[in-house]
Length: 415
Image (cartoon, helix red, strand yellow):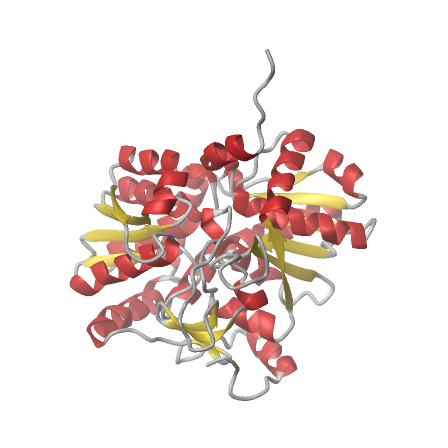
């Protein structure tokens, strides 16, 4: 399927989204979302949905979740004004510092929330997938914190380029399973985690790392990560006296970005930009820019935008960033793009690498390659909008990318 069945009423869909009508009873965000899973998984998914309804917004769960975020994750994360970067770009640049969260990225917020839910649902073991390794590390840490066995599936290619995170997962007590099938990256890792869940849907809990997958996962992940946007909105109003002119985050599957965007969607004065992995070009197989270059279809249990051929075959993606290297995107992002509330654009590998150098040398902050895509997009927006205020979600720190960065950016010093 390469087009939606009928034109969208963008104004109505946005109003319904702001009013909290999505996801609806079918797990849909407008035309996107839903649940496309094997019959063997229906009981497990329905049990999860019941658990989400019962526990997620209950006062007891929220008290425990908030307590873990404050005492263990390190929330609220800081809001940093980037003075030297602002001078360089000609705009006021604020950074929401998810790189300062425990384990080095936003992923830990979702991981501890889902692990707490898993315990309430009586799960005996956790399975998870990971691309850049940050969700795997976060899952391993959360499971260690709560005393749950954890198995993480990771593509063989990603294991090679994210070796430090593989070591961290194992030190935290997780079993890391290399995935050598398919494209050997995040997509293949999700396939294997789903297979493990199908094999034992009663005692296994699938701790999904992004705002993708069958309902209720996109909703669950958004609700857990929405703390990013709530914190950032309160912080920038206190520090800046006004909302930003633009909010910018990187988008792969879309968990950090939907968490950052959600609180700002009703604010019509705030332009929202999602920056996807432009890789090495616009051709199929040269990028991971799903909203920018994709078409509608079904992947991993949800109807969303995908990178696929004309006959519906999912295509391999490419990005220097393992965490953005996925051929789909969360269904809420698909809706936000379709109705024009969020402007999804791309940043190339080259632009992202340059952004790593810039932030490191001007602000003393080494960003993850994923976050660097958001910075590259922010730089372009700043040049087109001098003097404006930009809020960038800095989703993670770049320690995990050192092998790639040293190879691509650091030249040996001459004797």
